[in-house]
Image (tube, rainbow, N blue to C red):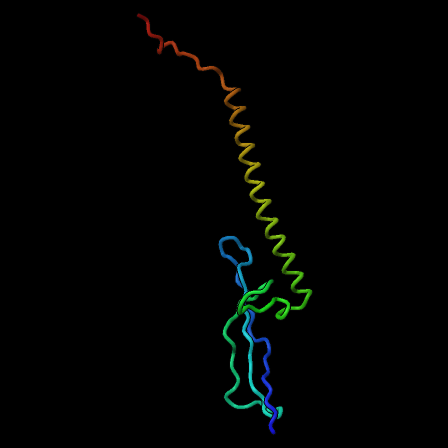
Amino acid sequence: MPKLIERRVPYEFLVRWNPATGLLQGAHVKTWGWVEKDGVPMPGTAAASPAAPVTDGPVEGGVPLGEVLTDLHVAALATIAARDAQIVQLQADHEAALAAKDAQIAALQQAAAPASVVQPDEVNVG
């Protein structure tokens, strides 16, 4: 009796970043599969799978990231994601600090401005 075996190997890995923020937005993977009969690929059976989302948790139809990349790659991507979040927070903190400094400067300038002085040509002599 012939032995049929389905084979599947990684084929494509697509990573997308958000163009507005530069942050990692998502990833998809495709595999290449074929059927072998007694160790010989059967003609017409080779094909790429549809793209499936790469996930870091259980998702219907998703491919766990650990199946696509090594543990080292997964750890590196987790570090990048954490740093991206840290950068976003630091940028927000920096903008808030700048706004606070601008408000302090405006208050100091207003306090240091001379009291309004009536000019002689503005005096209403009656």
